[in-house]
Image (cartoon, rainbow, N blue to C red; front, side):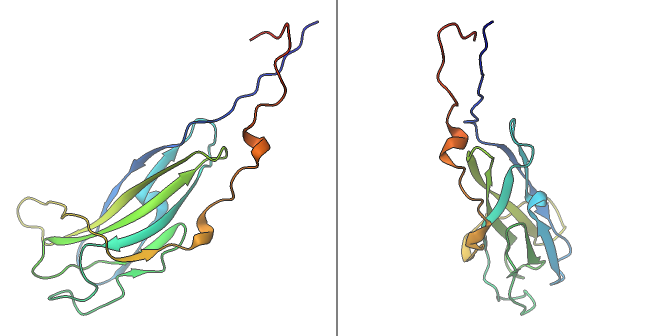
Length: 166
């Protein structure tokens, strides 16, 4: 009787769909944004791939003309959530927060990207998302990343033997 073992090694990173979150009105309130609001992750081999924020930034200064003189605008950036202030400068095009994220599956395959949270200047006319920026960059905690997989988690087990059926 012949016997064989087939080992599947995951070498493909997760697939990601980034989202833009729109906030209105610009009333200076803090809103909690979760990682799931920013990105949807799918992975063929890992239904629970780890996804986390890596950094955040805004295209406008924390305090500027007509923004209500409130700061900080990015509060409590953690692995899976952050609070952002719904405001924009009075004489600008609108505020965009940009957040970096990283997704890692059990095989150690990773993908990185960004998502945006936008506050339009006004509701009149055609709405457009202002250009993102990287001013006032804030880093997420370093311990958000999962540990790398053990070397033997990615290596095929056993050698093919004569007579193995593939």
